[in-house]
Amino acid sequence: MKLGYKTFVRCCVAVIVCCLLSSCYTVRLKNVYGDPEPDPFNDATDYYRYMKVREIDTTIKISVTDKDFTKLIKDCSEGIYIMEYRNTFGGILLSAVTFGRKRKVKAKYVCLKPTN
Image (cartoon, rainbow, N blue to C red; front, top):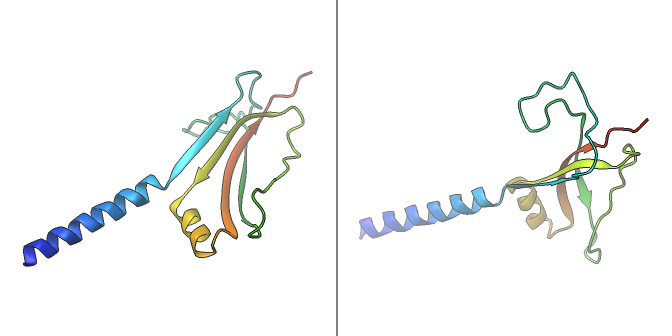
């Protein structure tokens, strides 16, 4: 009987771990026209090397009747080159606990290089 209980617990833990890992994802949208705004001092080893990256990391409040939320980006006069949206388990948990009224927003974006 104990062997069956241990197997059940292990299966439950495996399912929970799979759900946690699949709930973290990143979506990146890239403009194929234009060049990114350069930043020669950004020598990061990730995708954004030598690009001037701006970040949004905030928690937004939405009422139950609202279906969407708009955040205006005013510092990109030429347009956006790359926009990355990240969803984490903590953000999903916050949304679930508050019944969707609070949501965690993590985004990175790179503006287009200004034309002369």
